[in-house]
Length: 278
Image 1 (cartoon, rainbow, N blue to C red):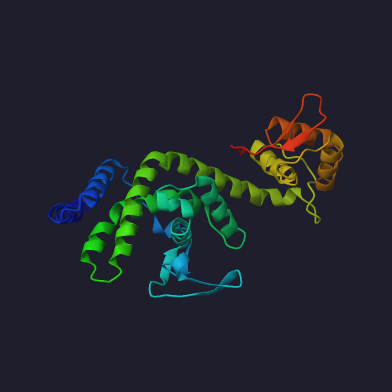
Image 2: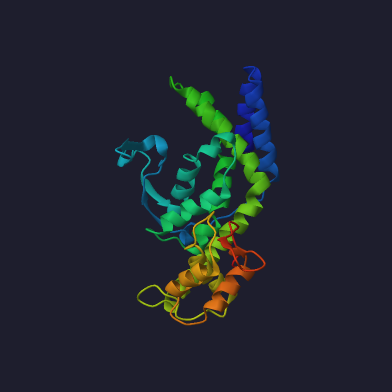
């Protein structure tokens, strides 16, 4: 990898591409100092996937996806690789070299509403893509290309270099959030026995992670940026539980920071911050 980067750096220097040379030096510095990741492919959830799924491969009609093109890279991949890659190549903020962790987590959660990911998938999503960015010499691909659209490769290479810097600074926070998501999925599976056929909570869990999941589900029934009376909050709680201790649930939602209130209890609202389950 080092030899490939050095060869591409020499091409940039000889061609007078000062900005490209700057990006390559940055890549080399990060690769030299980053943690050496090892992945067990057998632990990933794998299957046949598109291989290059991103916004430029989608046909859009009548406000919905009507087709997907270019399956030349289709083969068996870890699903999480395709999910992470598709988000990063479609999210608007990535053009600036940043990833909105909250949006990325939501994207993964949306997938898990229709598909399945295991703990290893979730916890390694960030590290897998960080490693990919580090070992792929994108600027080398730009120099080797003879395509008329080779400037696209340059744009992607520069974006990848910016993302490498972002990952270097934010990988620990991203990994933390992914571990939280992984733990959340485990406890959500256990939560199924706590609800009746109508989706009402039949028992208040004893463990904090499961309590947070149950309380968050109820708190999400409150509209954001709207004020509620205590009576209205109680009614929302009543509609979501099959036991009688409404005051306990309201108090716990407040103590966990899921809802806010005035000191006299005359107004309640949905708080915006996320609550860690661990």
